[in-house]
Each structure stands twice: as C-alpha cells, then as structure tokens.
Length: 118
Image (tube, rainbow, N blue to C red; front, side, top):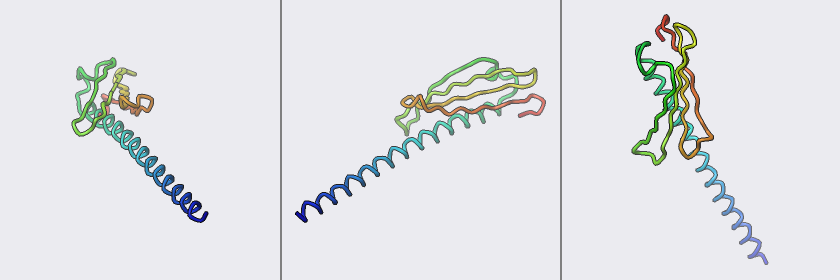
C-alpha cells in the first residue's frame, strides 16, 4: 500500500515536471518568434528611413515579401504600406508575421517628414 502511494506521488511529480518543461519550451518559442518579427519590421523601417524621400520604394502603395533565413526553419512575411498623408509627410506601416502563426502579427508605423529629414 505504501509503495502504491509513493509510486503515485512520484508519477505525479514527474508528469508535472514534464508538463512544465514542455510549456516553458512553447513559451520560449513564441517569444523568439515575436522577437524575430519585431526585429524584421524594425530593421526594414530603419532601411526605409535611410532612403531619400523621393525614392521609388517610398512611393504611395503596398508591397509584400517573404523572408526565409538559413538558420531558421520559419518563413516570415512582411507587408508594408506607404501613404502620403500631407505634401511633406508619409506614413509607412510595416507588418511582419510568421507563416505558421499568421494570427500573431507585429505592426510598426513610421512617419517620415521631408522638412525635418526623418
């Protein structure tokens, strides 16, 4: 009888530890994907900021591309929209997400001013 009780307790302890470990790995993976989408969006905005205001890439409209890195099995999608909100101001919205987690998107917005130069 004592053996069955101790065996049950050890089994519950091992099962709880395994569940906790699996849950921790899932949370880490989600955090890594969130960090990667934020990194892709912000680096793209930095690239757009360095372009001249009249650049073809900064013309009003929408575009999309896919990114596949060698070190990661994930494929990411990046969409961006450029809107002229005034004669000397543009609004650039960049949205990034993993192909496997399209419900979790990272969206960043940048306002460019021709007069201020940024």
